[in-house]
Image (cartoon, rainbow, N blue to C red; front, side):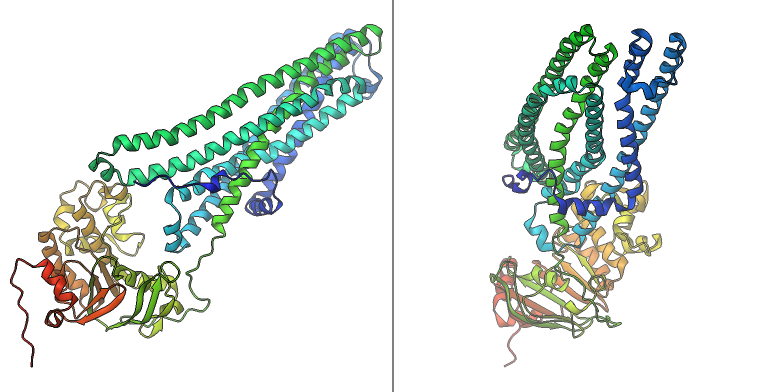
Length: 616
C-alpha cells in the first residue's frame, strides 16, 4: 500500500464571506427562496420577541411592586389595570403567550432551515455525482478516490451545517444584538455603556478562540480526508494486506493518521473548554457592574428597580449571540473553503464530450479502423506510435504483446475513454469523435480482466440498468455461459443477493456473469480484454461454445495473453513497444518466426511446435 497522498486543498481555509461563492450557492437555494424568506421573517420576529421579554419584568416591578413607573414605557402601561393582582395576572398571561409564540417561531424557523438545507445539499450532492460520472478517465487517474469521496460527503456536510445553522442564525444573532443594544440604550444609556465595558475583553477572547479553533478545524479536515483515502485504499486491497501480513504495519499507519485527527479535535475541545467559561465570567462581571452601579442609582432615585432587573436579564442574553457568532464564524469560514473545493470539482471541464451536431451512426456499425494513431497519457511520452489497422465487419481480431505494449490502450481509445493526439479512430469510415458518445459506447459489449459487480442481485448485475432486458433474457444469457446450473442451485435464483464487488462469488463466477452481461445486451461490437485470464481451463472450454454464438456476426476484438484463445482469430495484431509490428493469422505469424513466434514458444516450450513449411 502506498503512503497517504497529500491533501493541500483541505488545508486551505476560505474567507468568511466570498461574494463569488455566495452567488453560486444562492443559485442552488433559489428554488427554495420562499422557505428561506419565511425563515428570515420568523428569525426577525423571534429576535424582536426576545428583545421585549425582559421588559415584562421591568413593568411588573416598577408599575405594580415599587409603584415607580417609568415614563419611557408609558405607552405600554397606560392601558394596564390599576389593580396589582389583576395587572400581574394579565402580564403573566401575556408573558406565557409570548413564550409559546417564541417556541412556535423558533421551532418553525429551525425546521424550515434544516429541511431547506437538506434539499439544497441533496441537489448539490446529486450534481457532484452526476458531474463525476461525466468526467473523463484521465481525471480519475490523477485524483485519489478518497479525495473525491470527501468532496461528495464531508465538504457538502460542511455546507449543510453552514446553510442550516449558519447563515440564517447569524442574521438572527445580529438582529438580536441590535435589538438588545437599542432597548438598553433607550432605557438608560449610562447603564448600557457600563454593560458594554467588558466588550473589548469579549472581543479579545473571541479573536483568540477563533484563531485556535480555525487551526483545529483545518487539522480535522485534513485528517478526515486522509482517513477516507487510507480506508478506501486498504479496504479495497484487504486481500493483499492479509496475504503479505501487513496488518501490523497498516495499523501503525492508520494510528498515525487517526492520532492527528484526535489531536486536532483535542485542540478544538480545549478551545471550547476555556472560551465558554471565559465568556461566562465576563458576563458575570458585567452583571456585577450593573448590580453595583444600578443599585447605587436605585438608592439615589435616579433609576427604577425594574430597569436594573431588566438590564440584568439583557446582559445575560447579550453575550449568548456573541458566543454563537464566534462559533458561526468558523463554520462559515469552513463552508467557504468547502464550497471552493466543491465548485473547483464542478468546474473541472468535461474534455471528452459528444459533438454539438453528432453524425448518425450507420445501421450496421461493424468496421473498425485505426489510421496513423499516436497517443500519449502524458505530453509526448508516446504509448502508441503510428498504429494503423482495419478490422473488417464480422471479423475477429486478436491483439497480443508483452505487458505495456499498448493493447488495452487501443480499446480505451476505441471507447473514447481517451482521445488520440494524432490520427483517427473510425467506425465504418466515421471518426468516433464525430459520433454521440453514448450511442458510440452503446454499440460495444466489453468483458474486462477484473469483472465489476455492484451490490444488488445477479439479475441487476446482468442488466446493469438496461430494464428492457427481461427475466427471460437474463436467464438465457446465464444459460449460454454455462452458469444456469449454479444460479438454479441458489435459494433465490437470479434474485440472489450480490454484495459489494461480488464478495460472495468466486472470481470465475464473477467473470461468467460479466460474459452473461455482454450477451444480454446484444452488442454489435465485442471487446474481450483478458476476459478468460481469471477462468480455469475447464470453465474456459465450457464458455467457448457460448462465445461462438456471441462472436458470430459481430466484429470482435480479443486481448489475451493465452495464445490458445486467439488461434482462431481472423487476424492477430502483435503490439511491441507501442507499435504494430506484425499482423496475420496464427499460422502465418508462426511461419514468420518473429515476435509472435517467440511468445508462442515461451508458452509452449515443453511442447513440440509445428510450424508449416514455407510455400517456396
